Image 1 (tube, one colour):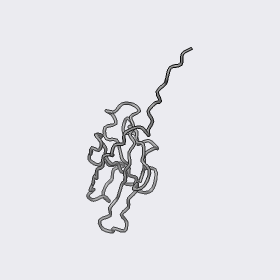
Image 2: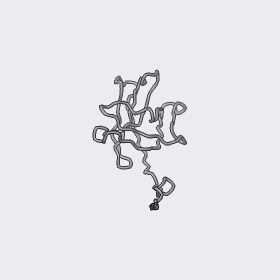
Image 3: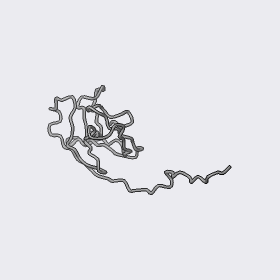
Image 4: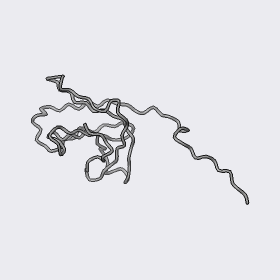
Length: 129
């Protein structure tokens, strides 16, 4: 009986580490208090070769306060099951009363974002502010 030598599979420890792409995107919403839509999208922006946008629900998404998400902008064009591991933070700046400004996500672990079809919400694995 012969036993073949099996080479060990590569592990995460053996993979080269790339510096993740970083970017700052600023979305200014004029007359926020006058928004009367259930949900509102930012313009699309590209980070890491993928298209993203910010999605807000001004009156909340099943809650009584603003809901804000990082959204995959071109989910219809991506293959079923597509996902990416991302680290991000979202901030809301109140230009009138700075004490009401808030940032969520800095220092938190990374998140998996999944492409959903038909403009469904992001998976539960993503972050909400």
